[in-house]
Each structure stands twice: as C-alpha cells, then as structure tokens.
Length: 138
Image 1 (tube, rainbow, N blue to C red):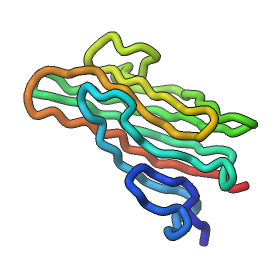
Image 2: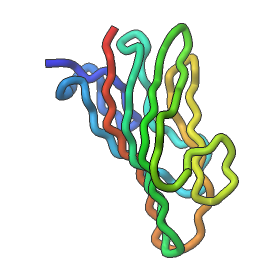
Image 3: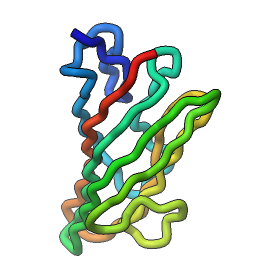
Image 4: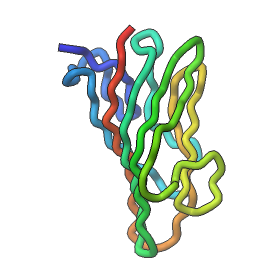
C-alpha cells in the first residue's frame, strides 16, 4: 500500500491517507473573479514529480466552458510545470483576457499551485477543477 504524499488545500493529510497505486482524485472549486485561489502544494521531500489529468469546467446561465488535458510538475532544484495536449475550450492562459480564463501559478520554491480566475457574468456560476494525479516518491 502506498501513502498519499500530496498535501492538498482541503486539509487532507499526506501522512494519514493511503492512495490506490499512488493515484489521488481531487475536486477543487474554481471561484469566480478570484486572485491567488489555493489548489494544492506538493512536497519535494516526498515527491519529485506529479502527473495529472484534469477537467476544468466553468459555467453560468450565459455559457458553459470545459477543458480537459494534462500537466506535469517536476522538481529539479525548483518546481516547474509543463502542459500536455488539451481538448475543448482554451481556458488556461498566462494572461486572463476572456472572462472564462484562469491562470495557474506555481511557486517554484514551495510547490504551491494557485489560480486567478476571470469574472464570468450571468447567474448560477459553478467552477470545478478535477484532477486524477499520479505521483512518484523519492
């Protein structure tokens, strides 16, 4: 049995929870018009890489946006993020230009992943970021 080693923003302790084959499934709320919203932190003393498939979904009464894809986090003296192919709406951007965009920010020293989100108008806003994450242990 492997031990979960990613420390998630929801307070789920890495030291106490087993994960099936090192895979963790996490759902995060993406708030509307938010700066530096917390997602998770990966501890470099326990893991040197993480591979994640994701689904990002944001919608209001005025529109639905869905993006699926993958990204990799790697620690080699500092954390870095690289993105794989994606399908659907192109929402993850370096600069928020359209209201559905989000910007992911990785603290290269601490491994904390945060986001900024655009301000979607309309009623009934929901936003989710679902991950299937596979990690490697040290």
